[in-house]
Length: 512
Image (tube, rainbow, N blue to C red; front, side, top):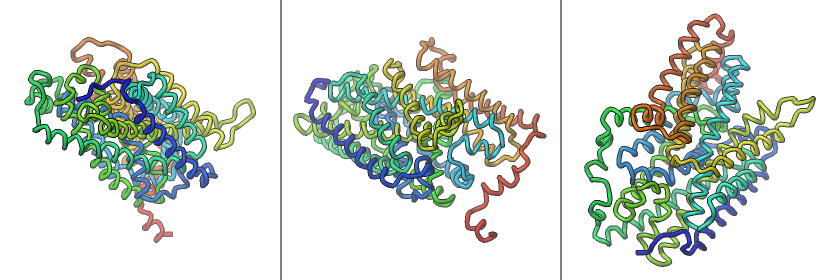
């Protein structure tokens, strides 16, 4: 077996990254040719069909945490971490049943658009805009960290190079063609990531069988019974962590800005539902693969469980396959990982830039106002620069942990807003703002402490690392109570708007 190291033949990895980058730019240029209007930049003029949209959603959704983090978590903590992929997939089932079609029928471009249309309040819109940006930045951070980790591990590059390269490529794609352009890019990148993870996994499983299916060196990996038992010996804290993770992943999907904006690109509510069904199938199939790497890592790379588990997918091919074969497989996973960073960053940047372009740079400043496309492009630059700069400070949390925190914040803010805004006519602007502030402040504070503070072990640490179990109910309860207290301030057109959300397009046409 070979010994992994950043200095090992970096050429295949570099070639893979260059090819992925060139393919991404080429497809982005193709999308640019048909991007002309502000609607093209924000929602691809609402003409994206379910098959293409499902591939694009899956491409942007399967991020650094999906490609690198899940396998590393399974290596380190065992089967309990399967709740991550299960929750990330099941979140779309909740989205399908409760949100997808009504949200598309709202006619909004962004989450703040929906909130203002539903509640008739600029204060709600401003609060939502701030949260979209903060959640997007929190989600972008692990993408840039993962890019730096990939280049450092696979090709021996400095850690700062990955964030810089990804930022430049993403800005070139997003600022030039917007949603129309990245739709084609992300659809391509889903199938690229699937191939880049699936083919090496099949080869590595064949190597494991050829080696006689070893279980790994004695004492070098967790006890099998503990490793395969959800909750393991966690007791009350383990039970809380698991249920809080389930709450964050199941409910956070509907609140992710780059996911929600995708449903505005469908032609109608029926297409939004069909898109969601296809997404569940595509993501579910993809998430069957990372556990293979996690299990094989217990046999061939148990030492990576000690603080270096995020590099497991990148290093395992070289550890298991000698010579050129290992280098080719490594190049494949490196290219797939880089595609993951580019696709997710593109979707997040588009979502954040749409909000900044409408609510910040598109507004009148000193008597001047940027046009729709110009404001979007300025927003794209701002969207990328800050998280890329923070990624260079190298916070200690793993990529899956940081993404999990983004899900917790989304679940604690936009999930209650969407559920109540779509299904309860009693929601008021005051109730929405109060719930968003309470849920957002609590979960964001927990995220900051998790990333940058060293808390002692115990319940305080557990509650901070996984806040969704308390922050989601708190935000929901706050919205309901404050809305009840301010029920006289409900917007006058709420009944008409609710009918619009829940009336299928075919029925609306028949009535027309």
